Length: 210
Image (cartoon, rainbow, N blue to C red; front, side, top):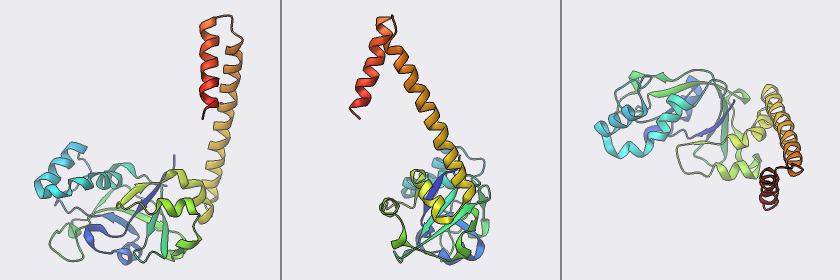
């Protein structure tokens, strides 16, 4: 399943949007002097505590780029100017860049990366042209966020026909299962087993309150 992510271009406190575009990468900070590819969640946490305990709140950001993001996922990168956003598709597994794993060097400190392909020929998309629901979600203050609920909107914006077809197929599949579930409940209401009929009635009453 394709997921949608938001990732801000400010790894380790510095705007790296131009690096992202020129190198076809996205990244998070946390220079730990370590390739995290084979680390467990607890091992990452222990390494963060060892290097700088104040970074522990960022473990979710590291987990997303190391484990959770997958090839084919879509990423929204909102610029600091609050006017532009960029769209990209992830095309690689986790990448570790040891030359950027330096905490005390300006312009470094973001070794945890993924390779991407940028939509719109690397040109920004005007933020004020985004749907209101997506714009509100981009106000989330964290460095990364999972925004898959907005994937149908983004699929249309970027014109990804394969993704739009995938979303349509998923919707049709859900609707088919929903219809079958309704049929099961209707049949259960007519059951001679009073417990089954009462349970079905409870489902209907609870659903009517939604």
